[in-house]
Image (cartoon, rainbow, N blue to C red; front, side, top):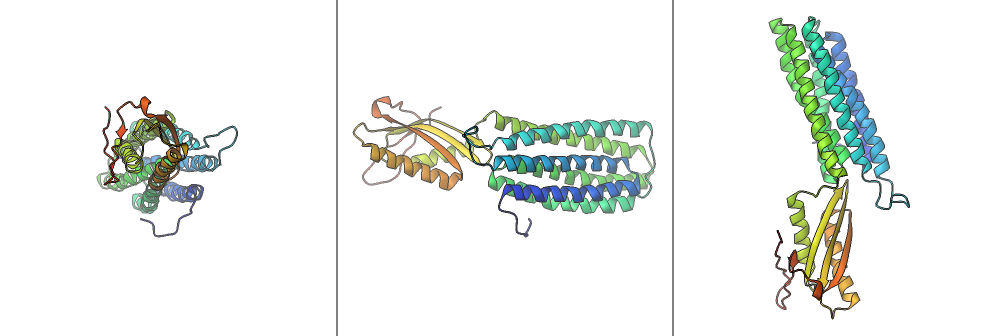
Length: 315
């Protein structure tokens, strides 16, 4: 949604995220100070976690952008998952802190002093978060950055909270039922807990090298099939996505009479096509002679009149 030029590096996006989080925190804390609303206080507490998470995301992206070295020969991409897991943990802790305040507010309800002034300040923070959360989500998915996606999801959870607060705090003021303020804080705690669990679940899946979505696997198979002419078969295809990097390996069966140079050219063609479609990709292809064919995976049927390859997907 943003029309402003964005930094090319994920680290630059993370710096902007930290600045936005600090601005939103200032607005939300001011909303609490002028109103005394427990619900607005809960929203401000959650935003403190946003600031901490943004700082953690900046650290993780700084580490993830480091090139591979002798201690980390596959790069530092998983640092983003560590940041996202830490962020999810902080969010869950925040949910329990807010929940405790909600219980206290229910037991000892206090009237809201200036709800409309508080809502105006909180609304400004909500609009800021909406614009930035959508930007982070869009950029994070485009660049395949778990840290940016997790941060965007967390920021957008604030937007839903902000919208609910506008309605809820208005009802508190109009109805005069002070305990509704505590109820709103409790609902915020439940929503924060949900977001924290989702962030942790996705990040742990990345740390465990979970296979990508079926659609991504199909795309990879199609690319191999369309660019493997001359080979006999491709099987044992395995892939995992770590941050912005895709790791892929498979066995490529070629005729026994094929020269090393010809087999190498096929591998280069497949690797080039994969990188063109998938972005940063590390491909390992194990070339095998035709007697090791398994007759599964991707089976190429060369024809002198066509460049198409037929595929049979093993179950």
